[in-house]
Image 1 (cartoon, rainbow, N blue to C red):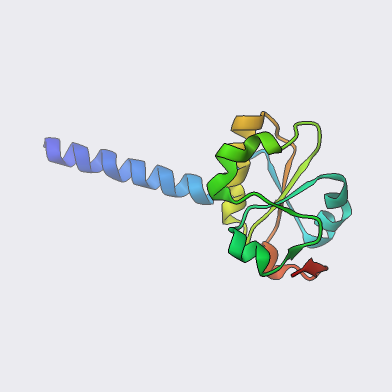
Image 2: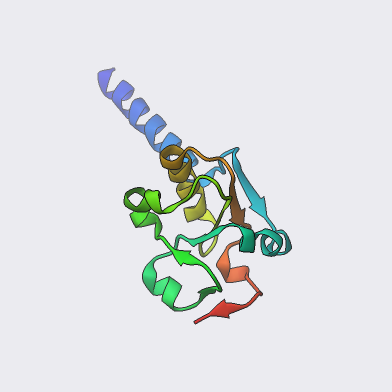
Length: 125
C-alpha cells in the first residue's frame, strides 16, 4: 500500500513539473511577429538561447542572456521597461518569464510567438 502511495506522489510531481514547463504563465503575453516588431525597439530585447545559437544569428539589438544564466544575471534586467523575450520555439521563454517575474518583480513580459525559427525580420549574424 505504501509503495502505491509513493508511486502516486512521484507521478503527481512529474505531471506537475512537466505541465509547468510547457504551460504559458498568465502574465506572459504572446505576440505575433508583427506585434513584436512594433514594440521591441522600446523595450529590453532578450534572446534566452545559448551563446552558440545566438552567434548563429539573432534579432538586431538583442542581448543574449541564456536561460541557463538568467537566475545569476537577472540584475541586468530593468524593472522600468517592458521585457521582450525570444528563444528558438517559445518553450524557454516561458521558463525565463517565470524567473524574471520572481527575481525582478515585473509582469510586463512579452514572448515572440513561435520563436526565432519563424522570424522573418532582420537578423545579425
